[in-house]
Length: 243
Image (cartoon, rainbow, N blue to C red; front, side, top):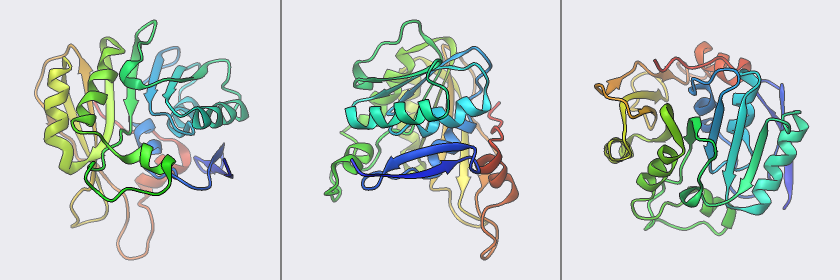
């Protein structure tokens, strides 16, 4: 596997990823910022890929205990290299497994994922790594939500990032997976534009109304780049308040 070397969080996190295939975008960084983890807690990332989500989260929360579940052995090894390069190997592990068949022991305080969500009927990529990372089987997002929930303790949080078009399906699956009190956090591309992606967070065995939060405006007007709020998350690792 040919790779490229770069960084995350404004250069603070050395990061290696595949030259071809699914390249890391904003999603894992923003997703990690939304996890309400505290020092000493245990987290699980489904479909860990090269480890970007776990790396960003561990950089923000000291003494985090984490496990990444990744079914591609090559990607899992790449994630382990990234974890070692950032000196997190004593507290974060990556296992080669299918999330739908994985059972964490002990159960986790937080579980999160950027699940495959592209429609199975769409045009397929010729790059297998990209195809595996994005293509969803029928009812696949719901199965991922169920698997994440099954690895949570009572009161643990489940967090995913999905297209806004998949939101009704996700909320239904969250209820079926015995989670509740959903918080929806839209990611607005810029003022006046529909949100293409949303972060959704729910709590295991919780009850309560679904809440639509103000969300985050990613880009300013014209060619101003990211908004100051987005820059603080992407560069400085500032947390997203989902409560």
